[in-house]
Length: 354
Image (cartoon, rainbow, N blue to C red; front, side, top):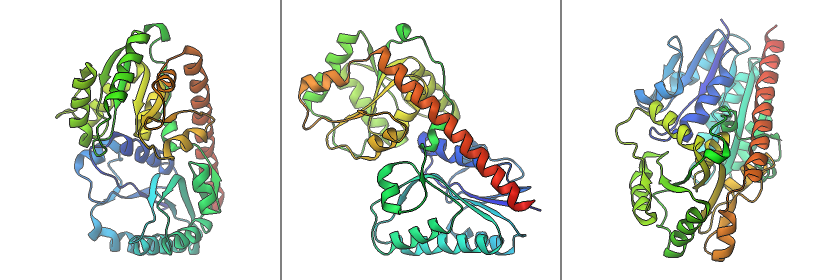
């Protein structure tokens, strides 16, 4: 019995997190006869979003971590361990967690197995958590990072597109038939100021687009409702809609958009997969989105609204078919690269086990 272990934790109510964990699961499936998945404290709806196979062994809650480790130790030779994609917090307080991950890596390597770390990003690196993580990453056969800054911090591994770009490109509507400018901002950040609101309204009017606010993370729903009121646009609620149904509705909206404004990376990733132009227009944007898109050759995605003139912001929000076509080409290349990486990993596992 060849076993594959995969970590798939994540907060319910976040389409982007579900998306990248689902892609992680795709990388893990097919590498063994039996799948063991750790999903943390996620509810049943999360398991449905990921599409876990019914025969998988699912470990839930932090109390199941000892069992996860026991199963790793007891696994037959050549197990596969796939860490989840996403962002890794390495600020103070994460040392014990990183020691556990290091122990998991050592167990699998001592058993002649394969450790896979899909494209990830490092957040708030601190000592000693960063040092522990670097050691575990070096001991893994496959270590991928989704941005150049993280690669420089980690000092090992290689650059790869964010795994979300593997979720499937969509043809969407022809450019001339796309009629919407979509907005989805984090609810935890301050509401945009009057100048931002005026600029977005003016950009939509100039392009002849309807403004619509959407919700990709449940905690942002109130913010999207408020933005629709300020922008004079339509509001699409999430409400009680099933997460998978809501995800497909979102992607259909992105199919109809020329421009999508957000400070959430996987809102912009999904938008770009549908052929829309992604723009991060917020005060003091983090480097995360800009660097992840730069890794696939897409630049000038992010703009700091607190230091940019209205003219510069309007220029960034001026949709152009040529820009959309350029981004779509880069996104398709990223999708091909991820598929190639997945194939290489499957072949490497086969060689180890043959």
